[in-house]
Image 1: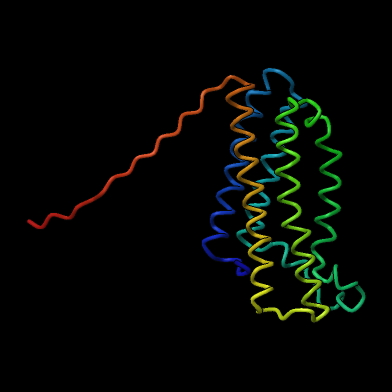
Image 2: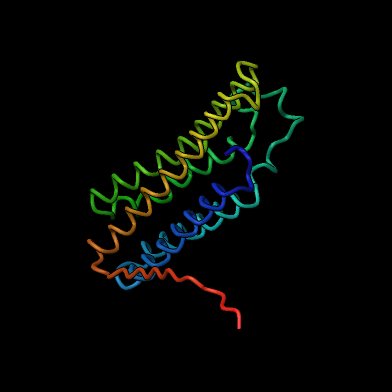
Length: 192
């Protein structure tokens, strides 16, 4: 799970793009009701697109600067955690009006899903790297593997909860119909 280009990464990217699509869908509906709130939903779409690109292309890894490591405490040696944490704090302020505009159930589920996602992405990541940098565990040990699995699982779980929340909001509060078509076919080769 710690490797970036694998099946769990692809799954996470698809989850993030699903969140982006649903945020865009809600934003289009909200345009008829409140343009400022609609703009927040569209902004959320772009944030999820960026997160999907970041997950797929490892953009955050570019912010790991080995020359800074001696000057940082072990908890922050993975430097990308600092700007991303600042960005999360900024986003909490930016999306406050959107959150206050949501029905209580949707607001709480959104906050819960965000807490789970961010706890995994930033919190567990920082904790695992802290243990590695203080030499409490080895980088490729079983314990490190369990920590990274927990980190990725929390990120995925947070995204799944958020997708559920967005679908619940679309269907129950915006009274939109969601139609999902799944078609399973098999192809059989017939020799002539």
